[in-house]
Image (cartoon, rainbow, N blue to C red):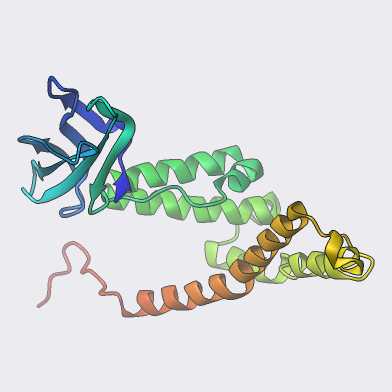
Length: 233
């Protein structure tokens, strides 16, 4: 079940349960109003209803958590299947710290995507990738083509630095290395930080290469749409 923020509820019944909810429909991937006919309470803890899409008439199950007095619980609305669209990426704050304009470009691309504006979203994403290469390489390479800048990143960006930093931390004299001189004295904060470090390493060394290989395979096998006006002979 996916949480649905109260701001997406457009109208409510007299008992304050949602009557209409505006979401990206999970069936037709288009912005739509989903409308409920009625709600049924179950066990005095939840109420459920199937809301129908105004575009494709597909239905989405909504569940509303209830207060002990039977009223709806704020921020207690859930739906299945999840709405179309995408959530912001994990670590977006790092992009914002690198460049406010690039972060806003990402936000715009995501917003366009979540409104099913596929062409505009693709153009914004290309602009984001191009802007990211300029930000990382410097303005002196702005006039190069995007493929040239991406190739330059592989040569100029020190991708080994994160591993060198970890090596220093784990060395016998490093912040974490010293902790193992007395394992019984290791505290939770140290373990929390080491767990986060291990997860970052897994993401960097295992997840990212694996997902990139999977993405390349999907790109290679994706159907290529015909250009306008280039219909088959």
